Length: 214
Figure (cartoon, rainbow, N blue to C red):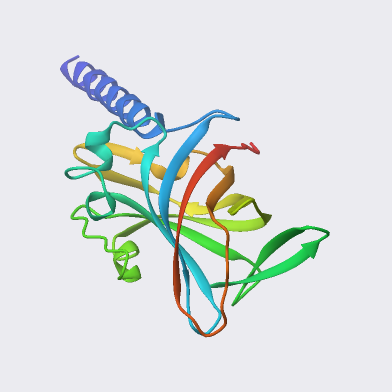
């Protein structure tokens, strides 16, 4: 009888623990059409003609500021960052409009990877500081193009989740990969003026909207 009671008690404890873990891990999930994240950063254009994006999140699926920043909000204190693989920017004309698209330097797709850094130290002049944390998820940048008009560049595209996992942050289990499995991104910045052989750092801000596929 005691053994049975012990087994029941242990089973109940395991069920409760699993339920708590699921609740913590799943609370980041954002429904279709909801704002997944808002971020700011830089488009880095290198002298060899390749480019990449780095940035940090100041809004991430409803997380409080205490879970987003180690101190006063800014790139140097952000726990969650993003960095893309290298791509090229190809402008093309459409009447009086200038459009642009991106193409991967290697492989079939540009990839954007999200990172978690428990001791953030990001520096816009040191891109590697945006990817020296723990990899939390990888996203495939599968489509999109931009338009330059009235001194502003706007880019709209799509990201599909390829892989990801959970992290423990300040005692909270966060399933970062569970936020959404697909997002539509809108990035805005000043008009691009790419000059061959010149390095540039272009400020941008962006929003990711959930476009769930399952």
